[in-house]
Image (tube, rainbow, N blue to C red; front, side, top):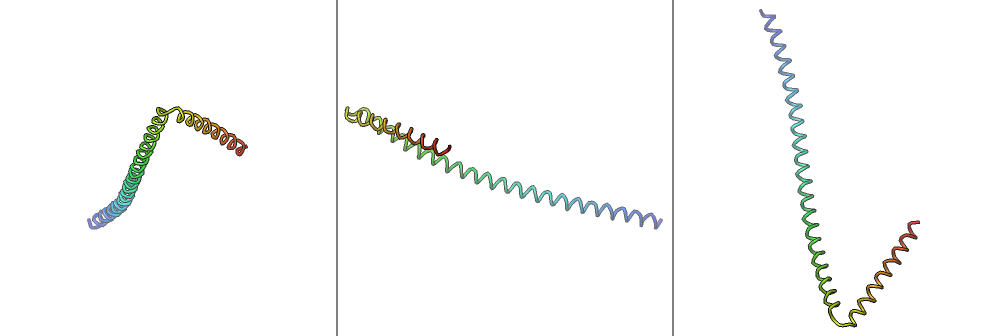
Length: 109
């Protein structure tokens, strides 16, 4: 009977060692998942901050464009001289655009 207890004890020791090894393995995996969850949380916060900054930039650009459209509309509705000046400026901008487009195309070749 002493031999049976000794064999039984060694089986328990093997099972205990196996359980400890599996517990350590599980602990390592839990630590890794915790680290990944923390990294995901940090990345999410960074992305939210970036999007908030982008939103404020779009709002300021919208404000600038709205002001420009209002000034443009006021200039168009005013006297005939302003309309002529506006026509010259528009034609000049179109010409400058085509010149820049031509230069960029030539540089890329």
